[in-house]
Length: 156
Image 1: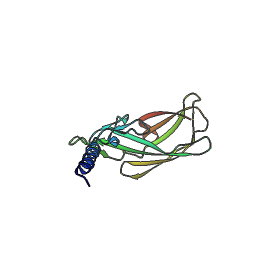
Image 2: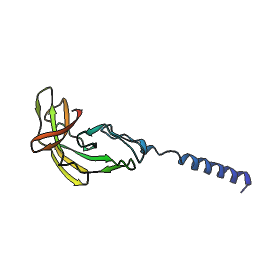
Image 3: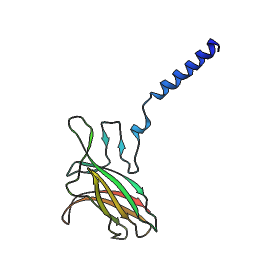
Image 4: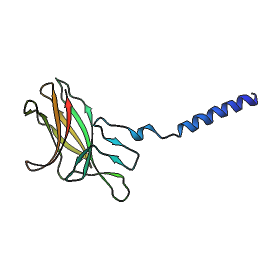
């Protein structure tokens, strides 16, 4: 093979290598809830249980339809003051999810929430009883008293 061919191959190889070293796009990804994870050591949190300083990041495992229930995965984090890394932490009690249709003044079927690991929860039985504008209310309760709540608007 000629020297110019080898030089061309090397030039192309180095060009691809330098492009692949750029910042990875997944470090600035956006989840379905709108919460952004920026890099490895900071968490821009749109949903916060302010009384507990807990960030909530959530996503649909399965979106509900008019005929089928859905399910949600969500996690609760606190930012470690020492290094700024998000740490998965459990809520003081298993969070509650209430589905509410403000325009009609009613909710829907109860959602079952289970803790499946430190700071990791699965909500199943997410069902909206009719099309329209709903609220997904993530709540922390003490008995029947709501201690903290964050609301996500959702339209079916």
